[in-house]
Length: 412
Image (cartoon, rainbow, N blue to C red):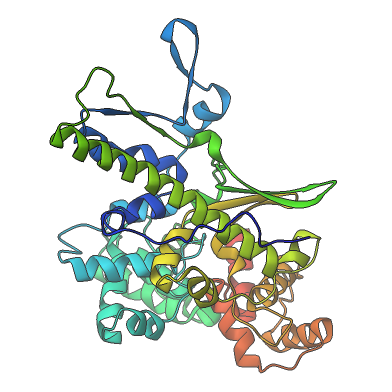
């Protein structure tokens, strides 16, 4: 099967289209909103939403079941976070840029899983600046988001409680001595402190995990009798309708507006072409995954080089976009993972760790050393224990002794 086909148009942006990168970066549900300002400036075009269907007599109805579920669905964690990146916590363009980069490194449970040094290097700033901005997330909703682990998340949440100083001190002491909290049972406020800790959310974005939000994928990968095919979800794309009937199209003002409209249409086509090529590359690199295998190492910079784009642009282009295949619906970013060795990705290791811990004996949680032994046996690789610890923390999972305490706490 020839995977590189039907895509010969070079995806180069004109100076006009560069200013419309939000069209590429927006998720499919936000395209109407992103396009609206351009439409308002042009009297010769109107926007036909991809979420509408036309009927006889010019009647327009919104599609019922899918769109209704979308309209009543709770906003995603990332939408909620993006909306909060405003003054006074983030007063400058630079602080907002750093905050957005931090959001891109927050997992679905609400934990920060990136590296401060990587963000600082990508944005050419000091690590102290990045960490300072991350600490400001302690004042955002959901409380505890962007913490590096459960303990920091608990501290973020504790600071949101309005309690007397004496109780605050004992709760803080229990958080930092979580493994040995029973040693403080004789403290006067021990029971009250435990009741506070039980109110903490773990993970911090747990309410977003419980919602089954309708997701509209941008890319479909399907198996047919001719092989595996890639399709862009055109059904929900808005249409730019140009109407100059009866207008003198030799007028300079009209010419300029017509050109502007065509550039806008080109921008939408550029979005489709870019996402098509992203899907094509994902299929090439992850072919075994779509046949039932594991995700293999795939670097974002490789995709950026292929598309002749800046890695940060591609990072934003794949953010909040999804791919549908026979195995389910997946975020595009899930397919990009660093390599442990030539054939094993960090994503595969993390998935294995999460599965082990999900099914562990709650009375005897599995240690990092035992996880390491099972990984080396299963994947046939050699790695160090601190790598397991790092991945576990990136998943927002506490250590074995900490998990044992948590199991006891939340079962009581």
